[in-house]
Image 1 (spheres, rainbow, N blue to C red):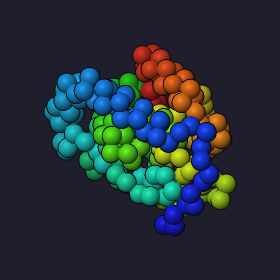
Image 2: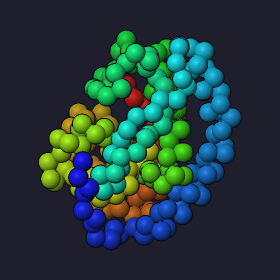
Image 3: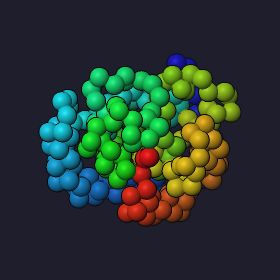
Amino acid sequence: MRQNRRPRQASASPLAKRIFDLILGSLCLVMTAPLMLLVGLVVRLDSPGPALFRQQRIGRWGRPFMIYKFRTMTVDSPTFGPKPDNLDDERVTRVGRFLRRSSLDELPQLINVLRGEMSLVGPRPDQPFLVEQYEEWQRRRLDVIPGVTGWWQVNGRRQPMHDHVEYDLYYVRNQSMWLDVRILARTLSAVWRGDGAR
């Protein structure tokens, strides 16, 4: 897969954003560590298979990396392919339905944040086969580090998946620390309401 060309300097300082990710990401990881241990145990007890799910995603400038999540589907589900349309999908486990609804399945991505593969805020990283289908204008999503949450997640999540690129490009054009803080605040509100994956 070809590397996307490096863009001009974004409005948000990359160094400031990285420091922000390291400080807040480390704090969140320490605070949620007991919860993550509990979730991992429950996932293992609920269905056969590992607690963590790893999958290759495409990051900034087209670089592949392994994303971490708590496993929410049965181990015989295809590694790559369409995501479940709703929580009644037979591939989703009992515990997986709760994790998706509460967004707790995303917590292990704090590890990706600390490793610099992801940011707390940014466009969600796509699977390789989806990136291969990008048109040139869609590849602008790869100009920034992918995030655990993003502008689409707090605005257009209930819209069709193929419409999310416009939200991601809005973030690319308007990236700033203030926008990141707004997105994180709205994400916390959505998680508190249980407005996770459906």
